[in-house]
Length: 431
Image (tube, rainbow, N blue to C red; front, side, top):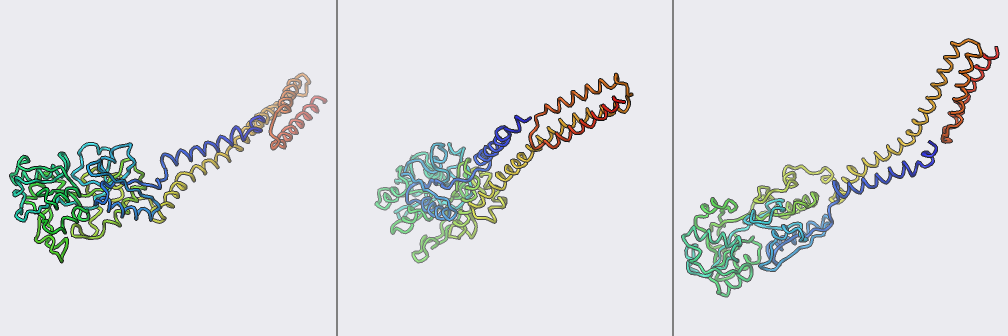
C-alpha cells in the first residue's frame, strides 16, 4: 500500500495524464480534425472559364482564412476531373461539366453542387450555314476523338443525317480552335463552355462569325439526359450589337463543383457557402438564386446533401468559420476528455481511501467478533487464553500495517480500541 501511495504520480496520475493527451491527439487527428488552411482547385487551362470562376472562389475563400491555389493545365493535358481522380495529384476541388460524368476514373470524386450552365456552341464563318446539316463536307474543330465535345458533335450531326465520315474533323479545341476559325483554317467550331469563357466571348463578338442554332434539340436531349435545351433570346449576349441576331435553340450541360470524397466536411461547406455567394446573381443563362442546385449529374456528396437540407453544425451559424471549427474540437472533443481526466484524478485518492477502509474494516470486524465472544465466555483463564492469543495476533498485524501518513489518526484509533479490548480481557482474567 505504502509503495503504491508513494509512487502514485508515476503509477496512477502520470499515466492518466498521458492517456488524456493521447486521446486529445487521436481525436484531433481522426474524428474531429481541423480543416486544412489551404486548398488546391483544378481549373483547367489558363484564362479559361473555370480559371475565371476559380479566381472568384479564391477571393471568397480567403475571406474565411483559406488560401486557395489554382492549378492550371495546358490545352490537351489532364482536365480537372482527371486530376481529382488521381490520388497523387494535389488538387482537392475542381470543375467539370455533366457530360464527363461516368466517363471512367471519377469514382473517388463527388459533386458539391450544380453551379451553372455550359451551352454547346456551334460557330462558323460561313454566312450560309444556318443549320448543322450544312456542315457536310466542311472542316469542323470539335476537339480530339473521344472528348465530350467531339462525341456530342457527332450525335448532333447524326440527328441532321450527317455521318461522321462526311465531315473533316480537326482535333483542336479552346483558343487554338477559335484562332483557326478566325483565320478561316476551319469552317466551323463546336465547343462546350460558359458564357464567360474566353473562347466564347471572343467568337460571339467577332465580326464574320455567327452562331448556329440546333435542330431537334429536344430529341437529342431525350437521348442524352445530361443535355437540356434552352432558347437563347435575340440580343441576350450583347443588346447593342444584337448578339445573337435571332432567337437560337441551344443545348446546355451543367457546370459542377467537384471535390474528392476525402475532402474535409467543413471545407466542403466553405466551398458551398462561396458557391452561394458567387453563383446567386442572374444572367441570360440563369435566374436569380437558381444556382447552386443539388440535382447533379455526378454523385452528390453526403455533406452537400445535408447542406441542401439546411443541416449543418450549429457553431458554424453563430461563429466565424475558423472559430467554429476550433470550438467544435474543444466542446465535443477536448472538454469531455478533460472532464473524464479530472474525474479519474479525483477517483485515485478515493481508491486509496477505499483500500484503507477495507483493511481497517477487516480488523474492526475481527475486534467486534472478539468482544462478542468476551460477552459469552466465563472468567476461566483457560477459556480466555485463546482470546488473548487472537488479540495479540490482531495487534501484531495492525502494528505491522504500512499505511500512508494521512491515515495515521485512523491507525492510532484502531490501536486504542484494541488496547481497550486488551484491558477488558486482562480485568476478566484477574478476577
